[in-house]
Length: 429
Image 1: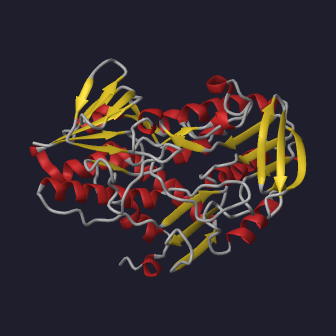
Image 2: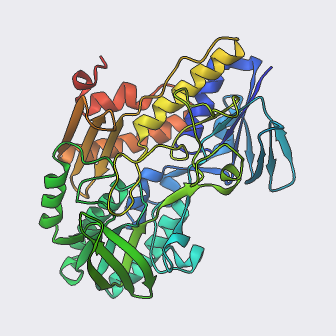
Image 3: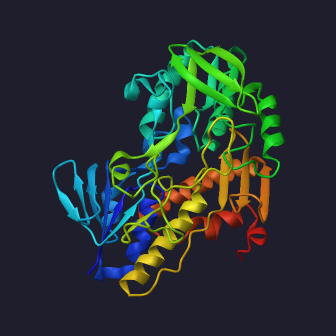
């Protein structure tokens, strides 16, 4: 009997556990270890931050859902991975042995790279985050105070960020909510991003994303600064060095704000980053084409915590995003390859590094497809419409349903591609 341990119970870890158990049956053990005892649907955090969702609507207890499928759960932070000894050590002192380890921890939020950034409750900083449900809760509490005394707002992404979609989402949702409250005219908004141009998205742009997102920002009266290197944040003030296309200083900005949400750069979580030979210098897990560590052959990884090189060099560093469809395909490849290894067969399954995203914009939305993620592409598609807003709401509900019921069927492959009407373009029928 093999014991597979899954570290992390997010958008990668929970489906990984369900798919592993469905593929392996009762003859093998699957254990999920997560720092907290609840699942959080991170894509809904922009809605939570302005009060369009309640925390209970986008979270759920992990243990009952997993136990119904015969999957063990431990709600404890991991403090050390003993890769040579095939075990993980937990905060409460337990040591859990494994035959295979699947790392889906997500990232560590590197607020320390920009002094003064991050939520006050977490870092003592002056900016908000929507990267976790706790941060989105804190952002909402600050937002409720902000709407009582509105003023300038700054939204965007810090140097080294790789996840730009939620920054755009939040800017549009934030603007739309202020309109509903009839105080939008009292809130000048500036979008500050490390991207070289609007709509770059860490992907070198997708289809007409540059002109379309610029148009949307103009329509929402949002100013922007690109190639923006935020150097520090003080209470009510952000210091930004704007670079030109050659990486030279173009302008220094000192921007006042009463509310700011800035996505940070990511790094690998500490226990994972500390394993010798497992990660790159920023702590992201090095993997081969089969999602497997080149050094530790029984360790696999998927999701935001894996090492993917930037699509291109940019004046201010930007990373490549890992979107839901990519994560889903990574997880499926891992399951196939672990099953093959248990059966004494070689690994053959590969993740599909394609980018597919549904981004909400308050009362409309944008969808993009980049196949493959790195240009040149076979599919380079970007569209907007109210249907995307509705599709994301439906996706949220279905994903949470899948997590509660333990469904192991792929969501993007079977439903999302059809929902946005591009199965013909991607070759899936």
